[in-house]
Image 1 (cartoon, helix red, strand yellow):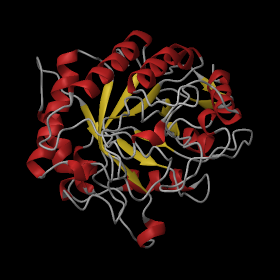
Image 2: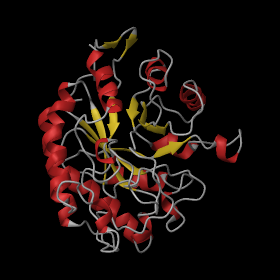
Image 3: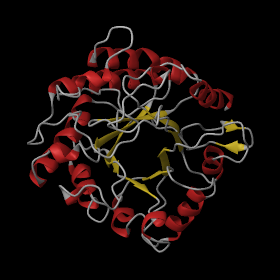
Amino acid sequence: MNGKVANAGRRLDDIRLDGLLLNSRMINGVFDDRNPTTRDKWVYPDTGQWDAERNTREFVAEMAGWRADGLDAFTLGVQGGSPFGYSKDQPWDSGGYEPDGALRPDFFDRIGRILDEADRLGFAVILNLFYQGQEQRLLNDDAVRRAVVDSARFVLDGGWENVAIEIANECNIPHCYTHSTLMRGENVHELITLAQSVESEGRRLLVSSSFVDTRRLVGPDAVVVSSEVLEVADFVLLHGNGTPTPGTVPELADILRADSAYRGVPIIVNEDDHFDFGADDNHMRAALRAGISWGYFDPGSETTWPEPKSTPGDYENGFQNVPVNWGLSSERKRQFFQVCRSAR
């Protein structure tokens, strides 16, 4: 970052963090909902109103504290992530793209404010473009390509230094991204190279797409990340959700590193909903020991659409369940940031 190896000389107990990013999924930092029938699901408990500007304003206000506590990077989403934490159906309209792929100015104005503060504080940002369920609001493949090119150009024109692109969230889940197959795991390399082709004054962005361990879904011989992606991606993004043991992601990384198409690029987990931070053998430490950056994903309540969001304390829990309290308002959040603080 800024020409230097991230976390050079920093350790978490016996784990060297040179070149690794302690990161968190903060995907809904610019969330809004254009669907009037679902908009009232996201109201703040103190006002009874949803306010997208307040959401981003409070996000920006907390960033300096996250950085001071030792967080290096976060993932932010143009189309957000499920405001219920997890959901199959998504009737809300939370994306920053028009149907033809044009950028929605209000969304990208909020993205710009977050990237401004990220640059000031020395954060790296992984900007996710497409989220399963919301990507269906784009008309066709041409709209998808326009969204990719215009998003990359937005970042380059803004001059932000430490922003990387994640094309699609979990692009290899079998039942997802059926509207535009360009985003699927077997084809996403085309969009990766498209984003890489956008340049400004000789500079381009680092680009990848995220994958989950589909061996548990389709069988032990499943190819998790294709050779076509390994041949072009600037880094490998993995999600730890659903991995049964702390050793699963390091094992998967070993498989990828042994692939003849792997080019020695960084491997980053930017979403993992396993915690147990007090244990020495947990998902976070296992990844870091294996030379893999690790990302905290705290969905908050596990309420799934269309169940009512009525769990007491929902506003305090998680960094995804909308409305989000971006402060360290739960014990789980405090535990994660205590780990970050302890890395010196």
